[in-house]
Image (cartoon, rainbow, N blue to C red; front, side, top):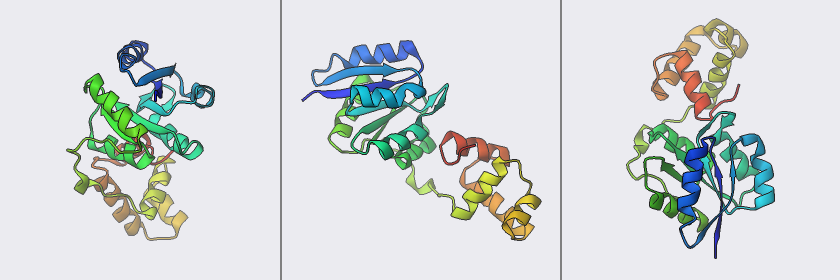
Length: 200
């Protein structure tokens, strides 16, 4: 059975190269390519792919957010997340978003083809060197506070809004910064948006 694959990447040369090399695999058929996330839902419904290969960062949106949407709207479709950066944070975020696999753009086309096959068969395919021990998820309160920080709220604003002491807010902010391994409130917000943890 041919595995129907849809490629999503805003770099035309990269996508055309991937498509050409993947088409050489006997069991993989590239049914289409998408340059803009705004066209993705229509492409999925029209082209009916088994597997969507999704770049993590696109000019008009976040590949991880769209991975979540795909799994919500089309739970039987599988997503292989593709990234130029082999960071633990990205790999964990891809898992949390519901992706079946994570492949670095530095990997071989054979590696990507294997990830597509594994995803199609319902298996996970992630780098084995990921440091799971450092994955400390934010608590519900920390996520609420992070969203308020993203809205340019001061610690005092947050304290009044949530009816907790300013010291408690400071403790949570410190914990957020530590868990996300950044060095500032702004850094925490930027990283959280990149990983699809919060939306503006």
